[in-house]
Length: 215
Image 1 (cartoon, one colour):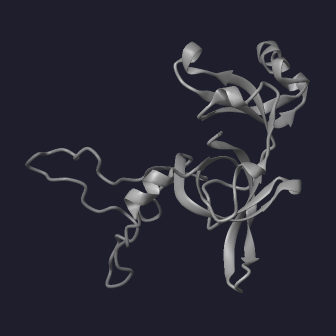
Image 2 (tube, one colour):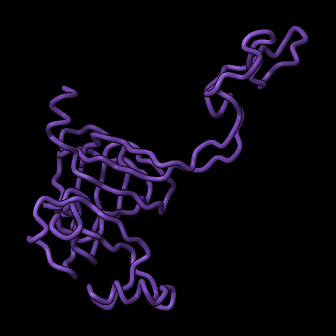
């Protein structure tokens, strides 16, 4: 069984559960994904599927990529990602994977690229509370002292400073699948997931053994 697939974050909304609870959910377009390559332990050293997601015009794809994707059909894809699989012999090149890979109520792990916020100060980047705003204070949003003058007479590596914030790969584990609509290739996941609207995310089944250890 494949342990994951690609999707696209469409946004957030609310969902009324059967017991009347109002649950905040993220809408994710889950597939369809096409198997473009099968990797086996005998030939590649590991078992995995290469999946293609989000079709694009053939004119937007270079010739080597077009020749690679032609093995799985006439479609070209904007995104190619690998997912681990238990038994690659159960799949064939050109096969389509849909949202029925997941089930309502199970836990999934979602990985995405967070929103980039550019060069940010210590208050926004690290949550510093800042200086006071009255009594003549001129230190409102600056970081303050960043080191010692005598010893070690340098800024310690890892000091929380202003700098690039966001635009990094982030993984959120154990998100509950609230609803699946296979005809629309849509899955509703409880809570927020990393990334902006239309951002590409990787959905994986959460390892049951890892959940048992956390419990």
